[in-house]
Image 1 (spheres, rainbow, N blue to C red):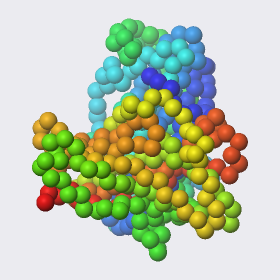
Image 2: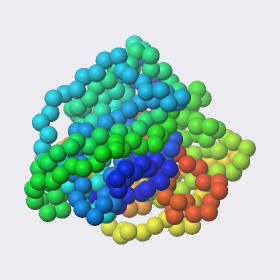
Image 3: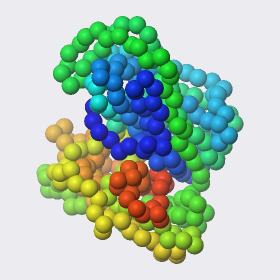
Length: 367
């Protein structure tokens, strides 16, 4: 239960309960090779209780819909849902004036023209290796689609959990109207022909930058922490007008292992305090010009002898990718523009969107 960055254009409300997708209205995913590739998508949704009493929320009832750009719901040719037994942690009592965050984790994979989407929704910002739902599409192509969430509250009295106290109690469900978020656009496209580490979105290119692709880790370094390396994203304005980008809390690292699975990630609280973006964090990029944002990363050894990749953000907090070994990995940065009007201010040239750059390989080795 926490506050989060609101995007009012994606908000729906019924009977005092508000649900919204907190991401920008455009999400871009690169697909390097449709014949045999996979990528992942993470979307945060907030449910806010504006009523004077508790609201019971059930994770297993929140569902995902995929739509075409004309608003038609796309029905998969085949659905598989793994049977799970809901726990009390899946049935949460949201206190009055509080927000509960839900995290959609979706894998998209293509094999021989068949698209498979595996997804689940949880309370944790991490990727499950065992998704609950699997959908198959045989006509899914590159292009623009839409995603939205639907919640139909059950009726009756149920046992729920107050996560702030750990107490269990009975609570009546009384929400009548379904909650349906406004859809956000999701665009699947190929990397640029001239640069496979970059994608171009409406004339703006976003490129993964990994200056050092061999990370040498010595035994002495692993006793504490290795020297830091940089991971970056280069944004180039190929349009005819100036565009503004923010470097504060807008970069999200993602890691892929040699077996193709995306590794879990945990967002740390950091020690910088609750600070906001400064004027120097906003960068105006003129036509034909570029700006590059970097995050720093280093390796630490866990108590079990395995490795953790620690990535420091450009604002609050850090990411920790745990239980790694020596070998090959792939990394990318996602640029997620700010969505809160208070952060964007009066900038009319502020670029809005969420772009996942292509993965770039690097290796962890010992001398």
